[in-house]
Image (cartoon, rainbow, N blue to C red):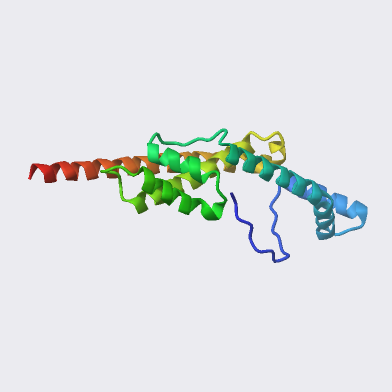
Length: 187
C-alpha cells in the first residue's frame, strides 16, 4: 500500500488540457479562482472518498484475516506457512511471526533463517502490492482513474517480474548451496 506523505498544504495536479479548460470555465462562471474551485471540489467530495477508503480498508482486513483469496506465489512449504501466519497479524507483528514460523518449520538444508524471513517478507510485500494493484484495476470505479490506468498496468507487470525474479534468485541460491554441499561430500 502507498504510504501517506506529510501534508504541506500544497498539491501539484496534472490533468488533460480539456479538463483544465473546463475547470477554468467553471471557476469563471462561479466567480472563483481555480484554487478556490478545486478546494471546494475537494471539500465536497472528501467525505465520499474517506468512506470508500474506510470500506476498502475494512474489506482488506477481513480478507486478510479470513485467509480467503490468499495467493502465495511459491510452493515452498515454510514460505506458505509464514504467509498464512503473518497475514493474520497486524503489520508491526508480521516479521516476528514469520521468524517464529520459519524457526518451527525449518528443515536441514534450508537456507539460513534470516534469509528465509527476508525473502518471505519481501515476497509478501510485493504480492500484497500486486493484489492491491489488481483490485484497483478491477474496481468498478476505475473509470475515474483513466489517466493512471496505464501506469497501474505497468506497475502490475513490474511487480510480477519482481516476484518472479525473487523466486528465481532463491531457487538459484538453493541450487548453488546444494551443489556446494555435494562437492564437499565428495571431497
